[in-house]
Length: 388
Image (cartoon, rainbow, N blue to C red):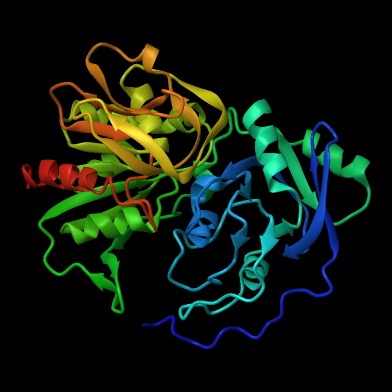
């Protein structure tokens, strides 16, 4: 494999400098800094996944956010060049209980500390992540800042100055700047990634911050994939004569991104094309079909969320990462709610009655897992192939 190389000898910073996480209400959590020595402000959320921290930190859906990991040993498998979901990470900062400074994995190329420095992302370790997580569960996601300075008043002011994610269109910041093709298929043990050899249908993916594994799974099912920027029009999409369209995941407020995306989505539905929405794409599809979205207090972030398929009765364990949700009570009668969260009953899926149009709030591509929801890609591919 391409990632079997010598672990980078670049040391984790030592001695560690003191660092602080300061919230907008003036609360202070002290620890030590690692990663980039820069100040970062954003919305603070927690993630309960036990694996896949590099995939999480490179997920564009985390733009504008600082991620607190509840699992205690983040960094234990190091970092490599394959387990990334986007070219440039957009997460604002990282909070961990203990930074694993000596990773143990045959694929590791460098420590997490070095990887964060490379991408100019600050981290803070050594604070009470359980107390912070409990606070978020009870009071919602606060605005906060990671900094290594001692001026708490200045750090508090920086946190208070963060505008928040409501009304913020972040998809335009993370989307591809121009159209590109994709042919890489899913990773195989001891072989790495492959290439699609004989495409059987054409798919356009609207990139609001698409994860690479979405593209890989589509390619693995025989898709000839064209990825288009978030602000693409209906004509831009139809020019490629797709047999189906995927609305990708992404960060920010779906109503804000929807100002330019929803007319395109409505046009695709009106054309009768198969449409598959994921995360932000799901939320904007919900708006396009007549519903509305709302901000969540804690959001859903992790790889262990139970979701029930209301049409089959099956319970799936899924990967989630979102702070907004479709308000199921606002959906018109011809839009069927298909999935719900078993944590809080919030909407996790929908479909348009009588049309090959459906979406889910969670991440069926997961990466690194779980894989309970890969069948959704099969469903989309089958619908697209019927038009090929």
